[in-house]
Image (cartoon, rainbow, N blue to C red; front, side):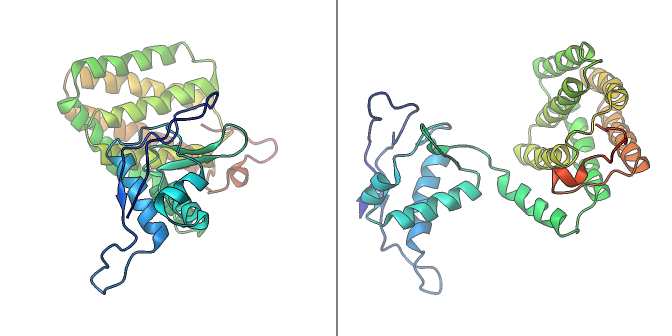
Amino acid sequence: MSQIQDKKPAQGETGRSGNYQPVNLSLQAAGDSRGKRPKAYAQVAQSIRRQVLTGGLAKGERLPPERELADAFGVSRMVVREAIRALESDGLLQVRPGAGGGSFVTHDFDKPLGASINNLLAGGAITLDNLFELRLMLEAPAAAMAAVRGRRADIEDLARVVEQADDLADDSEALRAANLEFHRRLVALAGNPLLSSLCETVLAILVKSLQGRLNVELSRRVLEYHHHIVGALLERRAEDARRLTAQDLEQLHQRYNKMGIRVDVNPEAAAPAAGGREIS
Protein backbone atom coordinates (compact mmCIF):
# COMPACT_ATOMS: atom_id res chain seq x y z
CA MET A 1 0.00 0.00 0.00
CA SER A 2 1.41 3.41 -0.90
CA GLN A 3 0.42 7.03 -0.72
CA ILE A 4 1.23 10.22 -2.56
CA GLN A 5 2.19 12.66 0.16
CA ASP A 6 1.44 16.38 0.20
CA LYS A 7 4.61 18.04 -1.11
CA LYS A 8 5.19 21.77 -1.51
CA PRO A 9 7.10 23.14 -4.52
CA ALA A 10 10.69 24.17 -3.95
CA GLN A 11 11.45 27.86 -3.54
CA GLY A 12 11.46 29.66 -6.88
CA GLU A 13 9.55 26.83 -8.59
CA THR A 14 6.73 28.02 -10.82
CA GLY A 15 3.25 26.54 -10.63
CA ARG A 16 1.65 24.40 -7.96
CA SER A 17 3.17 20.96 -7.64
CA GLY A 18 2.12 17.79 -5.88
CA ASN A 19 -0.64 19.39 -3.80
CA TYR A 20 -2.27 16.02 -3.19
CA GLN A 21 -4.67 14.73 -0.64
CA PRO A 22 -3.11 11.42 0.46
CA VAL A 23 -4.51 8.68 -1.73
CA ASN A 24 -4.08 4.99 -1.13
CA LEU A 25 -2.84 2.89 -4.01
CA SER A 26 -2.58 -0.86 -3.72
CA LEU A 27 -0.64 -2.68 -6.38
CA GLN A 28 -2.39 -5.80 -5.16
CA ALA A 29 -5.72 -4.51 -6.41
CA ALA A 30 -8.53 -6.91 -7.04
CA GLY A 31 -8.60 -8.44 -10.51
CA ASP A 32 -11.29 -8.25 -13.13
CA SER A 33 -13.94 -10.88 -13.77
CA ARG A 34 -11.26 -13.13 -15.32
CA GLY A 35 -9.04 -12.83 -12.25
CA LYS A 36 -6.48 -10.57 -13.96
CA ARG A 37 -4.99 -7.66 -12.02
CA PRO A 38 -4.69 -4.27 -13.76
CA LYS A 39 -1.18 -3.42 -14.85
CA ALA A 40 0.82 -1.24 -12.49
CA TYR A 41 0.79 1.80 -14.81
CA ALA A 42 -3.01 1.53 -15.13
CA GLN A 43 -3.37 1.58 -11.34
CA VAL A 44 -1.12 4.63 -11.06
CA ALA A 45 -3.06 6.36 -13.84
CA GLN A 46 -6.38 5.52 -12.19
CA SER A 47 -5.24 6.97 -8.86
CA ILE A 48 -4.17 10.24 -10.48
CA ARG A 49 -7.28 10.28 -12.69
CA ARG A 50 -9.50 9.97 -9.63
CA GLN A 51 -7.84 12.98 -8.00
CA VAL A 52 -8.20 15.08 -11.16
CA LEU A 53 -11.88 14.24 -11.61
CA THR A 54 -12.77 14.76 -7.94
CA GLY A 55 -10.91 18.07 -7.66
CA GLY A 56 -8.03 16.80 -5.55
CA LEU A 57 -5.77 18.04 -8.34
CA ALA A 58 -6.79 21.38 -9.82
CA LYS A 59 -6.57 22.37 -13.45
CA GLY A 60 -3.13 23.87 -14.14
CA GLU A 61 -1.54 22.11 -11.17
CA ARG A 62 1.82 20.47 -11.75
CA LEU A 63 2.48 16.91 -10.65
CA PRO A 64 5.64 16.08 -8.69
CA PRO A 65 8.63 14.84 -10.72
CA GLU A 66 8.63 11.24 -11.97
CA ARG A 67 11.12 10.19 -9.30
CA GLU A 68 8.90 11.43 -6.46
CA LEU A 69 5.81 9.81 -7.97
CA ALA A 70 7.67 6.52 -8.41
CA ASP A 71 8.76 6.58 -4.75
CA ALA A 72 5.27 7.47 -3.55
CA PHE A 73 3.60 4.67 -5.53
CA GLY A 74 6.37 2.15 -4.99
CA VAL A 75 6.85 1.57 -8.71
CA SER A 76 9.55 2.26 -11.29
CA ARG A 77 9.87 5.55 -13.14
CA MET A 78 9.03 3.67 -16.35
CA VAL A 79 5.65 2.72 -14.85
CA VAL A 80 5.01 6.36 -13.90
CA ARG A 81 6.01 7.45 -17.41
CA GLU A 82 3.49 5.03 -18.96
CA ALA A 83 0.76 6.30 -16.63
CA ILE A 84 1.49 9.91 -17.58
CA ARG A 85 1.39 9.03 -21.29
CA ALA A 86 -2.00 7.35 -20.80
CA LEU A 87 -3.40 10.35 -18.94
CA GLU A 88 -2.04 12.72 -21.58
CA SER A 89 -3.84 10.71 -24.27
CA ASP A 90 -7.02 10.93 -22.21
CA GLY A 91 -6.75 14.72 -22.03
CA LEU A 92 -6.17 14.85 -18.26
CA LEU A 93 -2.49 15.83 -18.32
CA GLN A 94 -0.36 18.04 -20.54
CA VAL A 95 3.38 17.38 -20.65
CA ARG A 96 5.49 20.50 -21.21
CA PRO A 97 9.21 20.16 -21.98
CA GLY A 98 12.06 22.40 -20.94
CA ALA A 99 12.71 24.60 -17.94
CA GLY A 100 9.57 25.09 -15.92
CA GLY A 101 8.01 22.13 -17.68
CA GLY A 102 6.53 18.95 -16.28
CA SER A 103 3.15 17.22 -16.18
CA PHE A 104 0.26 19.65 -15.69
CA VAL A 105 -3.40 18.89 -15.03
CA THR A 106 -5.69 19.84 -17.89
CA HIS A 107 -9.36 19.28 -18.68
CA ASP A 108 -9.14 18.48 -22.38
CA PHE A 109 -11.80 15.80 -21.95
CA ASP A 110 -12.79 15.66 -25.61
CA LYS A 111 -9.24 14.85 -26.74
CA PRO A 112 -9.84 11.07 -27.14
CA LEU A 113 -12.93 11.74 -29.24
CA GLY A 114 -11.02 14.19 -31.41
CA ALA A 115 -8.23 11.65 -31.88
CA SER A 116 -10.72 9.00 -33.00
CA ILE A 117 -12.32 11.34 -35.54
CA ASN A 118 -8.89 12.41 -36.79
CA ASN A 119 -8.01 8.75 -37.33
CA LEU A 120 -11.18 8.29 -39.37
CA LEU A 121 -10.30 11.40 -41.36
CA ALA A 122 -6.78 10.17 -42.01
CA GLY A 123 -8.18 6.84 -43.20
CA GLY A 124 -10.55 8.57 -45.60
CA ALA A 125 -13.67 7.39 -43.76
CA ILE A 126 -14.97 10.91 -43.00
CA THR A 127 -15.77 13.69 -45.47
CA LEU A 128 -16.73 17.34 -45.19
CA ASP A 129 -20.34 16.26 -45.80
CA ASN A 130 -20.18 13.93 -42.79
CA LEU A 131 -18.88 16.68 -40.50
CA PHE A 132 -21.53 19.19 -41.56
CA GLU A 133 -24.25 16.56 -41.27
CA LEU A 134 -23.14 15.97 -37.69
CA ARG A 135 -23.10 19.72 -37.01
CA LEU A 136 -26.67 19.98 -38.27
CA MET A 137 -27.73 17.10 -36.04
CA LEU A 138 -26.11 18.69 -32.99
CA GLU A 139 -26.18 22.47 -33.33
CA ALA A 140 -29.65 23.10 -34.75
CA PRO A 141 -31.45 21.22 -31.93
CA ALA A 142 -29.04 22.83 -29.45
CA ALA A 143 -30.19 26.27 -30.64
CA ALA A 144 -33.81 25.29 -30.02
CA MET A 145 -32.92 24.04 -26.54
CA ALA A 146 -30.99 27.26 -25.88
CA ALA A 147 -34.11 29.29 -26.66
CA VAL A 148 -36.00 27.30 -24.02
CA ARG A 149 -33.32 26.68 -21.39
CA GLY A 150 -30.84 29.52 -21.79
CA ARG A 151 -30.66 32.12 -19.04
CA ARG A 152 -31.53 35.63 -20.16
CA ALA A 153 -28.16 36.95 -18.95
CA ASP A 154 -26.28 34.30 -20.94
CA ILE A 155 -28.26 35.05 -24.10
CA GLU A 156 -27.48 38.74 -23.67
CA ASP A 157 -23.79 37.84 -23.34
CA LEU A 158 -24.10 35.97 -26.64
CA ALA A 159 -25.71 39.05 -28.18
CA ARG A 160 -22.69 41.09 -27.10
CA VAL A 161 -20.39 38.62 -28.86
CA VAL A 162 -22.33 39.29 -32.07
CA GLU A 163 -22.25 43.06 -31.52
CA GLN A 164 -18.50 42.97 -30.98
CA ALA A 165 -18.12 40.92 -34.16
CA ASP A 166 -19.72 43.78 -36.10
CA ASP A 167 -16.61 45.84 -35.35
CA LEU A 168 -14.42 43.13 -36.90
CA ALA A 169 -16.08 43.14 -40.31
CA ASP A 170 -12.82 43.99 -42.10
CA ASP A 171 -10.62 41.53 -40.22
CA SER A 172 -11.09 38.03 -41.66
CA GLU A 173 -9.23 36.16 -38.93
CA ALA A 174 -10.79 38.00 -35.98
CA LEU A 175 -14.26 37.79 -37.49
CA ARG A 176 -14.01 34.05 -38.05
CA ALA A 177 -12.79 33.58 -34.46
CA ALA A 178 -15.80 35.59 -33.21
CA ASN A 179 -18.17 33.50 -35.35
CA LEU A 180 -16.71 30.28 -33.96
CA GLU A 181 -17.03 31.61 -30.42
CA PHE A 182 -20.70 32.31 -31.17
CA HIS A 183 -21.31 28.67 -32.08
CA ARG A 184 -19.50 27.41 -28.98
CA ARG A 185 -21.55 29.63 -26.69
CA LEU A 186 -24.77 28.87 -28.53
CA VAL A 187 -24.36 25.14 -27.92
CA ALA A 188 -23.32 25.74 -24.30
CA LEU A 189 -26.64 27.54 -23.73
CA ALA A 190 -28.42 24.22 -24.30
CA GLY A 191 -27.03 23.12 -20.93
CA ASN A 192 -25.74 19.73 -22.04
CA PRO A 193 -21.97 19.27 -21.48
CA LEU A 194 -21.85 16.17 -23.69
CA LEU A 195 -23.40 18.10 -26.56
CA SER A 196 -20.85 20.88 -26.05
CA SER A 197 -17.99 18.39 -26.09
CA LEU A 198 -19.14 16.78 -29.34
CA CYS A 199 -19.64 20.13 -31.06
CA GLU A 200 -16.29 21.46 -29.86
CA THR A 201 -14.56 18.38 -31.27
CA VAL A 202 -16.10 18.85 -34.71
CA LEU A 203 -15.38 22.59 -34.72
CA ALA A 204 -11.76 22.03 -33.74
CA ILE A 205 -11.26 19.58 -36.61
CA LEU A 206 -12.83 21.94 -39.13
CA VAL A 207 -10.73 24.87 -37.93
CA LYS A 208 -7.53 22.84 -38.07
CA SER A 209 -8.29 21.37 -41.46
CA LEU A 210 -9.26 24.70 -43.03
CA GLN A 211 -6.46 26.67 -41.41
CA GLY A 212 -5.44 29.69 -43.48
CA ARG A 213 -8.52 29.64 -45.68
CA LEU A 214 -10.21 32.91 -44.76
CA ASN A 215 -12.95 34.69 -46.66
CA VAL A 216 -14.30 37.84 -45.09
CA GLU A 217 -17.36 37.94 -47.35
CA LEU A 218 -18.46 34.52 -46.18
CA SER A 219 -17.77 35.38 -42.54
CA ARG A 220 -19.95 38.49 -42.86
CA ARG A 221 -22.76 36.39 -44.26
CA VAL A 222 -22.44 34.00 -41.33
CA LEU A 223 -22.54 36.96 -38.94
CA GLU A 224 -25.87 38.10 -40.41
CA TYR A 225 -27.38 34.74 -39.48
CA HIS A 226 -25.99 35.09 -35.98
CA HIS A 227 -27.88 38.37 -35.50
CA HIS A 228 -31.13 36.64 -36.47
CA ILE A 229 -30.41 33.63 -34.24
CA VAL A 230 -29.81 35.87 -31.22
CA GLY A 231 -33.09 37.65 -31.92
CA ALA A 232 -34.91 34.32 -31.90
CA LEU A 233 -33.23 33.33 -28.63
CA LEU A 234 -34.12 36.60 -26.91
CA GLU A 235 -37.75 36.16 -27.93
CA ARG A 236 -37.73 32.45 -26.98
CA ARG A 237 -38.65 31.37 -30.51
CA ALA A 238 -37.17 27.87 -30.34
CA GLU A 239 -38.24 26.69 -33.80
CA ASP A 240 -36.90 29.83 -35.47
CA ALA A 241 -33.60 29.42 -33.64
CA ARG A 242 -33.36 25.84 -34.88
CA ARG A 243 -34.28 26.78 -38.46
CA LEU A 244 -31.90 29.75 -38.66
CA THR A 245 -29.00 27.75 -37.25
CA ALA A 246 -29.64 25.00 -39.79
CA GLN A 247 -29.72 27.56 -42.61
CA ASP A 248 -26.49 29.12 -41.36
CA LEU A 249 -24.71 25.76 -41.44
CA GLU A 250 -26.24 24.69 -44.75
CA GLN A 251 -25.16 27.85 -46.61
CA LEU A 252 -21.65 27.47 -45.21
CA HIS A 253 -21.55 23.80 -46.23
CA GLN A 254 -22.79 24.59 -49.74
CA ARG A 255 -20.19 27.31 -50.18
CA TYR A 256 -17.39 24.95 -49.15
CA ASN A 257 -18.62 22.28 -51.55
CA LYS A 258 -19.04 24.75 -54.40
CA MET A 259 -15.41 25.79 -54.09
CA GLY A 260 -14.11 22.24 -53.85
CA ILE A 261 -13.06 22.37 -50.23
CA ARG A 262 -12.32 19.08 -48.54
CA VAL A 263 -11.43 18.30 -44.98
CA ASP A 264 -8.07 16.74 -44.25
CA VAL A 265 -6.44 15.75 -40.98
CA ASN A 266 -3.26 17.48 -42.15
CA PRO A 267 -3.72 21.28 -42.32
CA GLU A 268 -0.96 21.57 -44.92
CA ALA A 269 -2.87 19.22 -47.21
CA ALA A 270 -5.86 21.53 -46.94
CA ALA A 271 -3.91 24.62 -47.98
CA PRO A 272 -5.30 26.47 -51.01
CA ALA A 273 -3.59 26.02 -54.33
CA ALA A 274 -1.48 28.86 -55.68
CA GLY A 275 -3.73 31.67 -56.81
CA GLY A 276 -6.77 30.06 -55.15
CA ARG A 277 -9.17 31.96 -52.92
CA GLU A 278 -9.01 31.60 -49.18
CA ILE A 279 -12.03 30.31 -47.34
CA SER A 280 -13.40 30.64 -43.83
